[in-house]
Image (cartoon, rainbow, N blue to C red; front, side, top):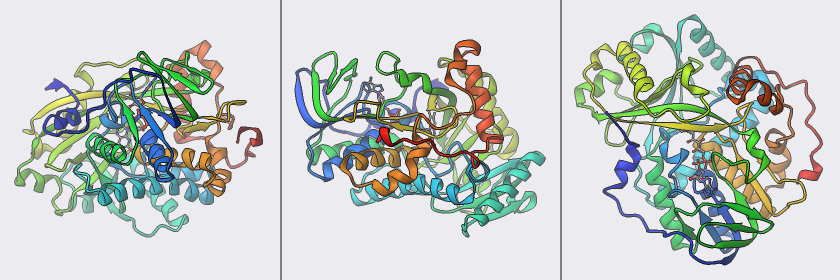
Length: 447
Ligand SMILES: Cc1cc2nc3c(=O)[nH]c(=O)nc-3n(C[C@H](O)[C@H](O)[C@H](O)COP(=O)(O)OP(=O)(O)OC[C@H]3O[C@@H](n4cnc5c(N)ncnc54)[C@H](O)[C@@H]3O)c2cc1C
């Protein structure tokens, strides 16, 4: 098993437009820094309105979190619905859940409209309970889906699960529709080509090193813009003090050779493939790719909160071993590649979308967990600048402001360290936090 991102491997047989680094000083209406799903989604909004848009990425478009991800397109990324209902109540939870759902629609429509070849598959989501706690989580998810008015869920007990998934040891499951799987890197590179054809300028291998008022400086030149959206990951504190608000969770991915028909039948005996994840705090997740490979991801509490990336195969080998323990008939599957990834997030697992005080031309999109969330957030930030998102903005902004209430202050990191602060805040946000009694802070000056 070699350490190599599978989606990068798939690029070797495809030709996307070459976007050399910036080598001069230029001007534009809108500069987007970061070509993940957030940045690309924002760029598409501005292009549609006829703006002159430049996008820079220090890697290739999609080359960081987005293009390392498992490509699950589900509204359920880090926070399940029952966790949102506990924290905010059913009405707000429905409102929040609608954001990633809109992100999914936006991605799927863009892929279909532009015929982007990126292994798009309709795959229902299946959340799998482990043990008694997992059974309770499934029951709670069902209750909450009903309380917010969703009707497309199907619940399985341990025995019924065997009809749809060839696994041992899951005690319950809840399945719902409207979710997809995609090769996220091919999707973004395909979208890049289309946006370039529509007038966007893209500079890859172009890192923003410094920002001064309306101008971003890179190694080879500068870009001066009326508006700047910063949709980067691993934000450096030299670029903004907001870096202190961003935390990282490490996960690992692996991929197999294509499965045989017999293996596919063992995995999904009901004949319908799904994207699945379990109820552990550091969960495992799996789905099939467009060419029937099994993508398996997961981690360990030991490595999730490490301050920097661990590149060895130790953790993913344990995830694979556990998977094979649950799917004994698939124990001969051959995993060929693995890769690690650091997911950017915040202390309460919701994004930060904010204009720094006194800099109305700047908008940061940070700490996003989930491709659908990122897609919604990019569009939200752009539409705010365009003046098209007034209603959305009033509704959603209190969830995104960096001045919202966090259960633990970011300054605590100086005493206990960032990993400890994040592991405490993360578990609190997922399992105990309640926000319903809090009033949103007044944020008029922020937008
Ligand atoms: C291993 C892994 C698996 C995941 N699986 C899933 C999944 O299945 N489903 C899901 O919904 N989510 C998944 N996620 C989370 C998801 O990938 C992220 O939440 C999402 O990609 C965030 O998108 P983004 O556009 O905000 O950030 P990114 O995709 O990270 O984009 C930011 C871009 O900014 C660029 N950049 C950074 N600094 C600079 C700079 N100074 N100058 C210029 N460019 C810069 C980077 O190169 C990068 O391309 C996974 C994440 C990982 C790591």
